[in-house]
Image 1 (cartoon, one colour):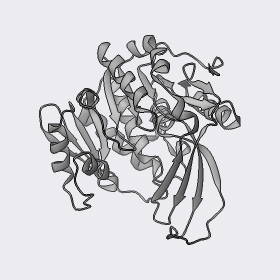
Image 2 (cartoon, rainbow, N blue to C red):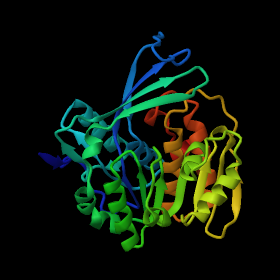
Image 3 (tube, helix red, strand yellow):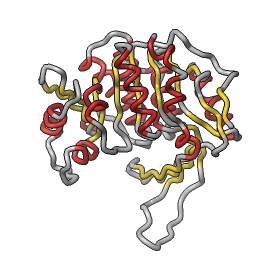
Image 4 (cartoon, rainbow, N blue to C red):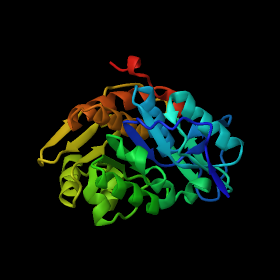
Length: 311
């Protein structure tokens, strides 16, 4: 049995529709990550709302975009909290599915340098299907941009992309966590957003930390996407647009506290700017500033700035 979030706003006029995941984050700070068979002490456990799809939606809404989300949470306390956090950020949740599986969860360790490792238990996210996307077709058709992530079944992602293409809606595809994608989905991406590790994986290459991000962007662009953005953490990002031109976007130097969700902040900010009519390079420059601000604060959605916070 499943139902929709009837208490949430429908956001028929949403400029941005996000199809993706919502998770309860369980975070612990550790001095170092344990090796095989090893136990290490950590700090106090923090719980918060997250999930790549929900993070993108919240980041965009906090920046002033009108956003609706299509996703799935459980009929549990975590589901209540996830939906409440979305609504408080201004995200329309009427198209969120509520079903029997428990809400998804992410288990996160953060080391003193701010880097994180994450294990995701999909839970209700795994129940999102093409029929849920089909129920959102009218809202999606009225949007300027679809942003989707790969923390939900590919069936739902493909259905969303097909619906967007049929309605002339721009597709922003954050290919994380990275999986093999069909040619049609790749060809619709405008842009495809990946980090350097994901770019190497999609190109069938070894994960090489010395790899040239500009070269990766060019190679990925040649595989079919209309445009590609390769994010490079504290170095910024590389944009390969439809003309084949490659542009470096520098990141602001900041003191890093917690990198969790920074990539989602980048994707949400970029999608919001594209939905407002900005060009891809300008949108990526804005997104880099938003992501830089987010890593200076602990947590995920709580670290995302409002428009007034972004220079």
